[in-house]
Length: 173
View 1 (cartoon, rainbow, N blue to C red):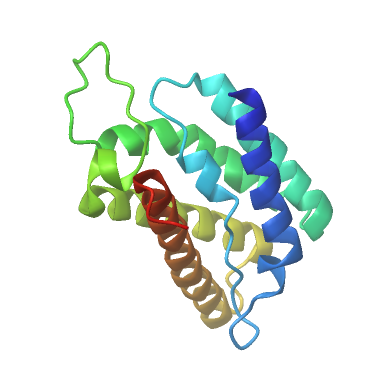
View 2 (cartoon, rainbow, N blue to C red; view 1 turned 120 degrees about the vertical axis):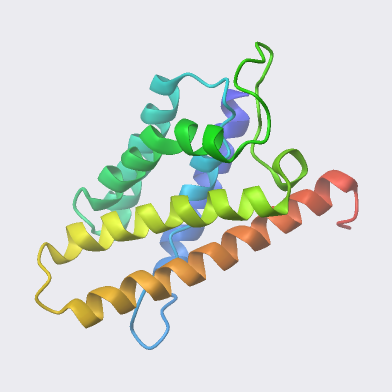
């Protein structure tokens, strides 16, 4: 399980650094896909493990993207909030002792999964661009960066989930 998770984080980190850091619409916003593996931790995963993975991936993204500490801070924030957000959008009772929800469209349904992704990405984008700007001097650019990055990231993550769902069904050839 550790090696599989390490491989996925490595793949997403490479895609972020080599491809998605260079994708911008009119010079605004960058899709931040490294949040996806963090959002896919199950409810049964220990908090320290989620935080360790989140910080490590954020730190590596900072090193390769020249964003000093911003990715580490925002991904650690998402790692801290992930179990609470997942529990909030899950459709099962928290009283169930065997409840170990793995986030996916299949386990949560499209509606809950999309809301889970949207709120998580919105929190990450606001935190990232607030740390980057460190002031609200140019609030129009600040807002455009958040909105454009948010839209691109959500669309890409939903595309990843659609492919993942299709692969589990055996529809991807």
